[in-house]
Amino acid sequence: MPGFLDDNALGAEEPLPAFFWTGDTDLACLRDALLQTLELGYAHHIQRLMVLGLFALLLGVRPRAIHEWFLAVYVDAVEWVELPNVLGMSQYADGGRMVSKPYAASGKYIQRMSNHCAGCRFRPGEATGPRACPYTTLYWDFLARHETRFARHPRTALQWSYLGRKPPEELAAIRRQAVELRAALAAGSRPEHGSKR
Ligand code: SF4
Image 1 (spheres, rainbow, N blue to C red):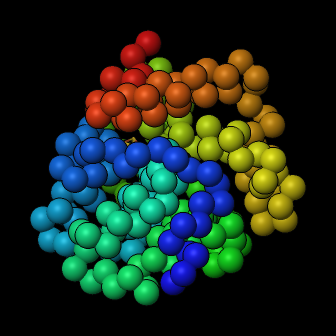
Image 2 (tube, protein in one colour):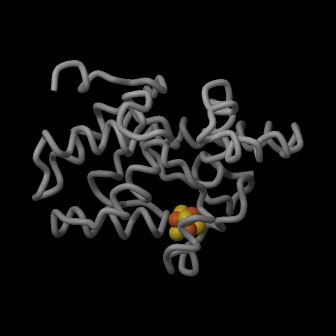
């Protein structure tokens, strides 16, 4: 698919965290999906979209890097199906040609839809501090980073309106923690190494 492969509408440039190739992470939901994937070459649609793809989207992983990972690890990955699903649906790298809004959610969504959070060292409702769920920290940071694009979009305005209710000092602390988390992950550390307070 000429052109599609290099789409990067959200300007995502982070490297894929090293633990995607090992499953060595403290994020319980992500670890479960990664270990299953690495062992079986299979994960169901929601694990792919709302755990693995979601983390890459919120972190801001370069779309081509997460596409190449999906293509490498899944036994059913065929590029003409996998590429539009990962770059379009999961990463919004095509700028909305395939879906009308990004699939962005916080750790609270994963808590509602699974039983992972009960056994995780992180807290899905917390966005800052040592127990903050990285999904939740990165979710609010994602909303802030892409406010201009989505705050007045008819499909996303409601979701983005919650950003305006965050006190500025709270949002600033979340964004600082997101910066630390990205730096730790880019350096190959575990997520908690970037969130000690
Ligand atoms: S607290 Fe966050 S990282 Fe841990 S299982 Fe829940 S959503 Fe995943």
